[in-house]
Image (cartoon, rainbow, N blue to C red; front, top):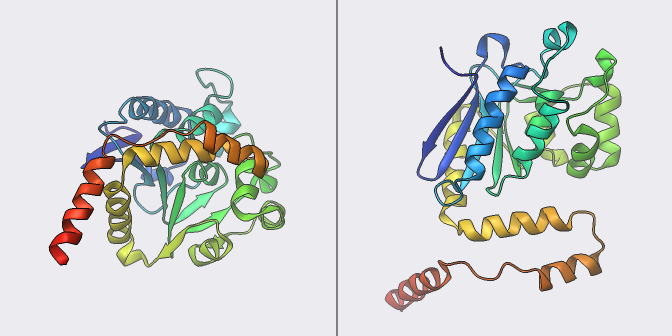
Length: 251
């Protein structure tokens, strides 16, 4: 039987695919258990994996938290297991891209917001429908959504429960970019290759700086950057030498 979260590695890229297409990849406890195993493993593979993509199989990214799972009473391995797993995904040393096509509703949006970047297909539909079901967020919506799109837009999304297209998501800053469905994979791979070509050391250091200084005043953030700096990577000299050699050949 195929797993509920599939992992595929290619040239430093780890792709995690939510794999319940017959249920529109709705998120249940079993899926989170598998996701957690992958996230924990990838966190230990910083020299082999430089970038992570999270996406969905079939028609969509994910329709959200499995309502049937909620109704029957979930039994996660420990309290707040799902929210902790999303936090670990967001806190991975490697940058994370959430690649969204089709539905990305509520719990799925909370999962997607763990990505450092969100790439949306034109077919993407983003929504926070907690209020439609008399629920309140516990996987990060109230904190990550306003930080991504601003408090007024977050209020709008949470109060109306309406769906926003990929184009609208890019316009409001929820998605970093929106691309046509027929070139979604091509654009995603091109972006991944661009990121992976740069220093993995710098990506990890920059991500850590952004996380650690989030919410600090400018003065304290600058102090953190200066006095808790990660320095230079082991590939710095090699990269500068390659650039100088290329420049010399052009001259």
